[in-house]
Length: 340
Image 1 (cartoon, helix red, strand yellow):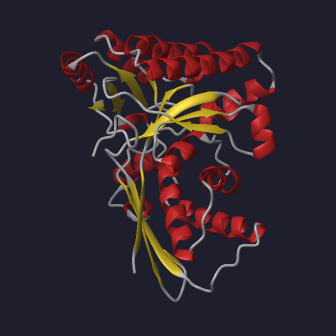
Image 2 (cartoon, rainbow, N blue to C red):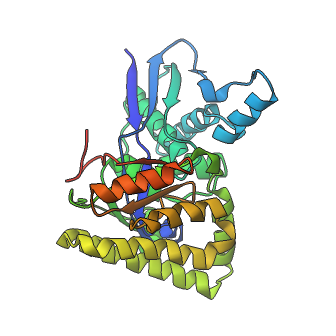
């Protein structure tokens, strides 16, 4: 029997990057793209590579192009780290595992290294498949923690819980990473919320901005740990923006949303300006030029925002296409705005 699992890209609607700093965020996953995993029993444990793991190239240009798209590391390390963290989690909890082996492979069409949590999606799908294979169940908060541990503990990638929570719950989630609650339970306060269908959202991205989130988060972490007043104040304001947007969604006050989204990005520029490339800023500026709101979905390379009507969406798509930017309407998984 082949076990097949799927996970989707994540878009942070508001609050990022405060999720790793005891802040609050709202995020969702969308089904326009996906990472998929297939797993089946075999005599030996085998990890099969995907096209992004290739080590043979036609020429230097091909090598350079592949590194630009996927970085220097493919997905095999993600599968290997996921399997190890699963084993360690089970051992720490004295969960017995049967003597069975498997072959696992993955595929993903999620635009890579653009703040859409593509790597996390591969890990989430792999963890689901391994759990199903060994008939092990984790609570949703524990599952999200396990996925985070793959990147943070195994691969030393700076990361927060937001991406993993949204991908675990498969539903728009309001997340409160209250310090006291986190220190006591090791996870945040998570609440499923609905995104009203009348809220028109878009996601836009371009592949030549692939750079990963490590650079921004490393700098921000240093400033946060050093107690830089502007950074601490920004964390508080991002949390306040998240609460305000949550309340607006509950009231179906769509008119209040654009200003909150815009402020999220403007605040990031105030405290992380040096880590934001000119091309990333330009995407936001072009979106706002046609009247749409805009902020990063993650740490750069892709943006999310709201638009008023189809005329504005068409203008947004035309304007951004001139600069090689793809614009989509995200099919939100779960909640009132769910799309097939």
